[in-house]
Image (tube, rainbow, N blue to C red; front, side, top):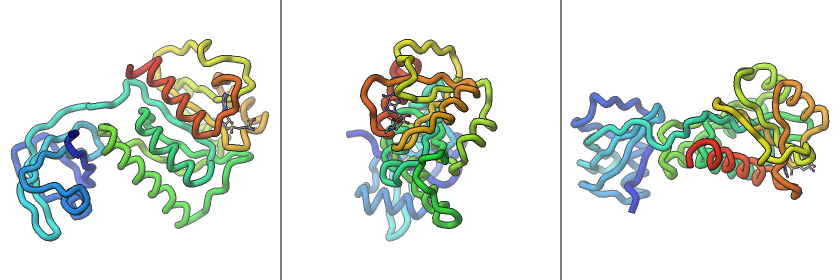
Length: 246
Ligand code: SAM
């Protein structure tokens, strides 16, 4: 059985290896009450800044739990290429799925976008709560899949603003079924990548043209029209398998 992994919301340092520390209350609850770990059990901790710590549960109290940090392991399970998934907003539960699987497939940022046909996003506290919810999904996905750097889920921005602000040195791919260019024809060099995916109603014609004017390559994933989540995850899997991890 895989050793259970927990994100801790406190900074850890390799210099602390060999010492004992109190787990933050939420992590202690998760480890002891939810995952039912007991004194002497092995676990892995990571703080999201890179690297992870092999640890042993040393003391369990009513609300608190202590661990000993046994060893630091640098840079596990991070892809070589930084990939941003720029996803036009779709329904919240579909975004939940996209965020979870995008993290597993190696995305380093999920950038929700407002487009002509995207799903409305609430303003103010309601919107902030939704981003926090997606960020928590990203943390849980990292705990599950072995990544140690937590991908950011950014605040939604309009497509035009994002195209204007993104780094021009990055490779851009916009998914468009009618582009006439198959994924297998794509030739991309080394470098970080932005993958742009439309909402369930698709991009407006001008939006694909705007992305192309900003240097994006328009690419088809085949003759079938995929749900937005299927398209996003198929593209991320293709990036990971053909140009990165595999
Ligand atoms: N009726 C919409 C249209 O024709 O554009 C369908 C949109 S589809 C449900 C959502 C998004 O997934 C699209 O905007 C596109 O980015 C991506 N997508 C779906 N199928 C695709 C395919 N075969 N090739 C490339 N992208 C695809």
